[in-house]
Amino acid sequence: MSFPIRSPREKVGGLFVFGRILDKIRLQASEGRLPEDYHLGVIAGKRTFDERVCRFLGVDFDALAARVLEGGTDEQILDWCVSTCGGPDAEQIEIWNGFMMKRGWRDEASAGLAEQKKAAGLGEREDIQTFFDLMDAEEGR
Image (cartoon, rainbow, N blue to C red; front, side, top):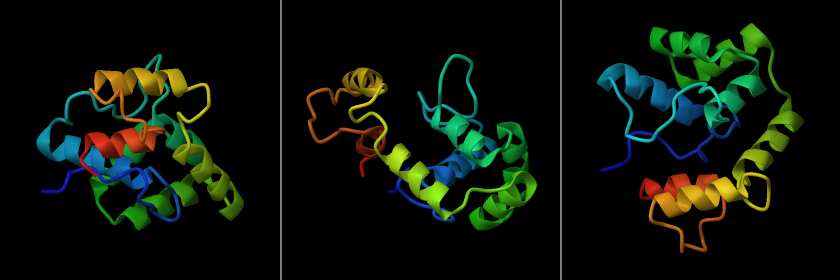
C-alpha cells in the first residue's frame, strides 16, 4: 500500500513540496486527521515546510486550504496561487528546490534533523542527511 501523502520530492509545476501540502489538506478534510506528528499549515513557534511554501508563493495557508477544498487538479490550484499572488520565475523555482531538497544538510537545521531522526528511531542512519530523506524513510520510500 502506498502512503497517502506523496514524497516532498514529487513536483507540481516544477515545485518541490507543494503537492505534499495539497495531499495533507485533502487527507485532513476527508478523514479528519493526519498521521500523528504531521504538521499542517502555519504553527506558532515552528517553521514548517507548509509555511515556507506559502511564503514562497505569497499565499495565505488558510486561503490555500479553502481553494484546495473547492476542488481542482494540483496544477489548477498552483495556477490559482500564481494568478492570485504572483509567482516565482524559473530561476526562483530552481533556487527554491535546491534549498528545500538540501534542508537539514550542513545548515542551521542540521541539529533539528538529528533530533527528529533520533525520535523516529533512525538516528544511526547515515543515509538520511536531509528532511526529504527523513520523510521518505519514515514513509517507507
